[in-house]
Image (cartoon, rainbow over all chains, first blue to last red):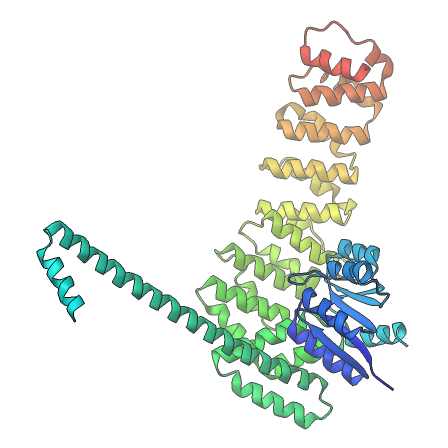
Length: 121
Length: 361
């Protein structure tokens, strides 16, 4: 059975590395993008089963990424948004744009795996 | 060779002014070449430094992830030994600490606990503690912040010594350390605080306090009596935020405080808590308090008016200040309509007439 593909857009390199380790151990194929622009390239070329994105990112924010995926690429891929404290308004905007779920930072990798499993069985 | 010879001849045979001009051009050219060289070497060295920094950062990020997800204790110990060896070097130690901080703020649960343990195992706190003795405020701030991030509680007494540090940023860091790690108990730095506590610092402290599950606030009476007006102002905010109704007596005492801002904030706090007992105290000395306090008190009456205060209100409808006049008329209209309707509509006071016409429109 082929592994489910996930694209992670996260500019914190050590968090990205940690999630890569955790998610690959849980049986997923994770592609990392350092910014929103790279994430769009990866989404277009890999057609992932799920997208994980931070809200604050260089070049293209998580909100712009969600908008691009939903409105330009017309994809229904589930999107989980990571948000830091004090970004409540951005989280609401993310849901308006079509985000599927959100996790507040600091995140628990174990909880993330549970949420991913629920979204892409 | 002929060209150089020709140039030499040309310069030698030129007038003195042209010779000076040429010399000046050569000097400028030399300086320009020197600056270009310096600039490129500086950029090169910065790039090199950045590359080294990135290399070590990547190395420690990988080691950290291996440590966190390693299932064997021996492998973890091997990583700790390796990091311990590197932490002897200033540059490498900073890189290790930065890597730990970069991940610590982003994750929770058992991994966060593991990062705190790793910081402890590497004895990195000793380096942070040593920064407390530095004369450079930024080094001190860096040390205190690090001890805060990695929950090093054991040095609180040493940190408390800097509560009145001359640099306000150091003081702020001390306050954040104490309140973040010791919650409401950390507020006891207020007992020792002699320096100012800015409005922004006060807001930051209140925001941190709001996040704690335990909302048992300590007794603020002593802080309301502090000789430091900033401590009193912060204590008044605590009274407001945590609705400390039992502080009525202290509020009455503060109405006689020497600082006008404290008196004003006391009236605002009493308004928030609707402490009716302060009304008679203020009315008795209304003419002696500042205009801001008078306006604040009349605003208090808007929500806590009692018919017995009609004479007090009536005497202020012709006050010289526009706002006092406006609020007094507003109170009269809302509570004593008949008295309001009987007011002289041909007064010579232009402001009075302006307000009356507006309210009757």
